[in-house]
Length: 145
Image 1 (cartoon, rainbow, N blue to C red):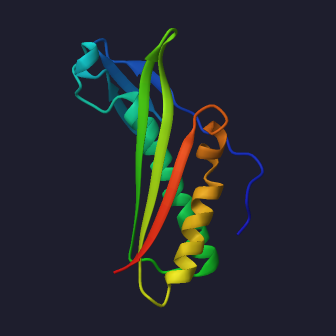
Image 2: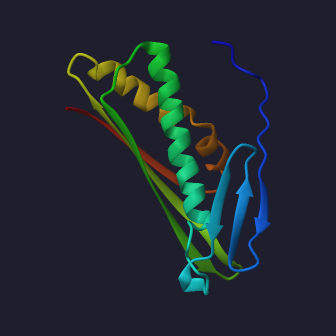
C-alpha cells in the first residue's frame, strides 16, 4: 500500500440565508445549522457536532488501515466522541475532547484487534493535529462478542 506524502481536502461553505448552510465537499454536500440555544433552527448538525463526527471517522478509518495491514477481523467498531465547549473571557472555546474506541472481537483476534485499536488512537492525524491546542483523553476497549 503506497502512502501519499501530501493530501489536500477542500470544503466550500455557503449560507442558506437563514441560520445554517451547506458545505460542498466535491461529491458530497454536508448541511449545518445553528443550535436552537443560539437562536438557530437546529435543523441540521451544528459545526461542533460535525467536527466531533470527523474525529470519530478519523479514528475508525485509521483503525481500518491497521486492521487491513495486520489482518484483524473485528465484528464491530464504534468510536464515541464528546467535546466540552466552555464560555470564557474571549467567547466560546472547545476545552476538552474525550474519545472511546470500542472494538468487538472474536477470542482468536483479540490481541490483533487490541493492537489495531491502540494504533488507531495513536495515529489518527486529526487528533494528533489538534492535541497541542485541546486536551484529548482517549481510551479503548476490545471486547469478545
